[in-house]
Length: 111
Image (cartoon, rainbow, N blue to C red; front, side, top):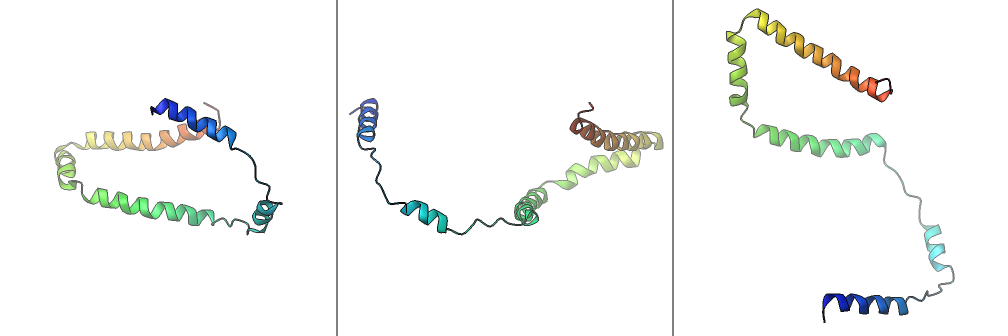
């Protein structure tokens, strides 16, 4: 029996045997007697999500070769002039101010 003909057979059987069994409102009574669903505190929901994500992120970060990543930046810091260090710090500060400002302006539909 091919897959297509079995699907046709199954569809025919389900169409023929789809009669509803009357339960005398038993299902409605059971559903009405169930206790109301209790919601967790929103902060607890966030905590339940944040703790495992933070632990996994720390585990992944602990496996990174931090010394190999930091060594070139430290070498640049030691060998660079004060002007270039100030330019980089000014650029980072400008970025730290500009990105949140753009985010706020987009949310307020002003941009």
